[in-house]
Image (tube, rainbow, N blue to C red; front, side):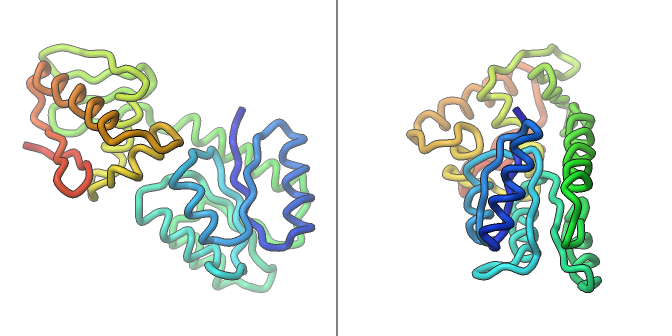
Length: 219
């Protein structure tokens, strides 16, 4: 079941929209401000985020920027006031995928969600870094030497690493995004070690740096 994060501070509207999305077959998690939304997406994976712009504590655009800053690429639809053109422009420039103005028709919102989930399904399944190709569809890494299958956890770690090459991902963030729960650090260390061993077998020209978090780099 595809999973949607709904971020809306107006309680009645939040309940109504949540019910509409759920009736269309999605699992929905609700948040009431941008800060809460940011904390949730570092612990759970979503297929689409629907987020209001004007909210207390942290507004939607600030939350969007913080999500993109740490490499969260989940498609985001912003809910904006009809007259706030600047919000739409700033949101799209910050990395939003779409926007819809209030008041909106439920059918239109659902159509926008379906469109973004289709795009997400069709996004690239293959990544290349150095002499290594990673196919997340079949959880396989390969070089001109050989190909090796990754288990589910190794594949999740590899995907996070290749999507966040510009920064180090902390141990806490990595464990939350791989297992959706707190797990002993030793478990993550073990799976990273498995990946390093596979890189050696493949004569890969990449490495996993693990000084201040985990980051994949060319050797």
